[in-house]
Image 1 (cartoon, each protein chain N blue to C red):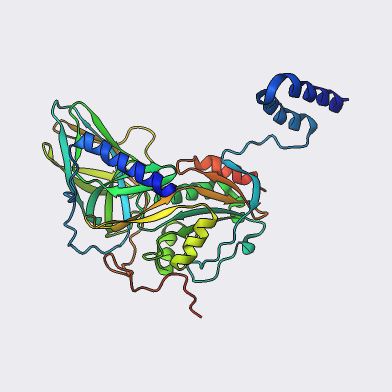
Image 2 (cartoon, rainbow over the protein chains, first blue to last red; image 1 turned 90 degrees about the vertical axis):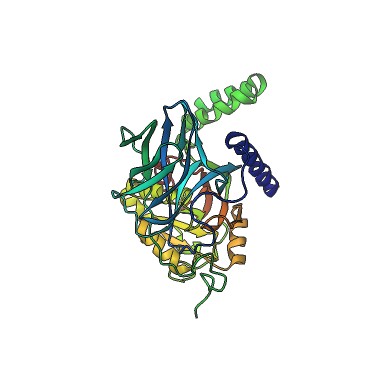
Length: 192
Length: 208
């Protein structure tokens, strides 16, 4: 039953996104081609609000940062208490005169393969590539939750990016390599 | 006198007021007669509380874990995985806040993460991951079958979903509830992912 619900919601999300973003493509256009090896050294998520004061839509194409090997855009969906996460199958559109909020339980920029610990109180630079605004570098503070008051605002052309933050997350040793772990000993296997 | 009065109110309620109003009367009765507590938990109360299913897994030091070792303590339980960028770091950050709010009482509360991704989450990886947040947090793993049995006992759903186009390779869909086991070893409360850490801390205080 849960499996059925999961599929229904998943399909609904796909259909809804299809309507919002045009026809979803199967091939990922975001981030690095799948063939590139990525060490699974931990992940983190960046959140922010991107507002577009222009009359025409802009589109977030991808991003880069020193603190992670790959940047992808993912979306969470709550299917009856079960959180589903998946890479966005297409670019993220910021409608003209509108805004898109990336937040917990919804859209987020996923940092894959961390290259260092993201400690509480630190910050890092994230460069986002937009179709119209071009490359925009945002300084992202690392903190446990969204700032209550005013936060740093980055403007680029018609775009305003505010409220950016990332929760603390560790860089982990890559014990398995990319997509690996098949041959690894399961954790918890008795050692005696 | 008060009791007989209340009994009469009770009888009238049953006859005339209907179940809705009767239900509203019950907490009032409890307060007036002193036979209950006026504290209302913020979390969803599992009623009747049942004995928490055993968790036969190993911790990040590969020591066997048993709930019996936590008798007299509250256990805050979560099912997640270390490659999870959104829900799990949010929850662990919240647990840090809860622990701080609990002050000295934190010594009587164990925070436990059960991985639902044993393929990637070795004991070593869990140890490294949790040490970053708080070295007292417990990380449990086991074989895929052991994890599945534990999750089933707690009503946790999870599923591996392959994304060959993503650098992550695959992601896990999973239930993001927090479970609380009381000091008597009973499964008592659950919380959604976006629950306020202050509510969880206050509820935990009232379990002792």
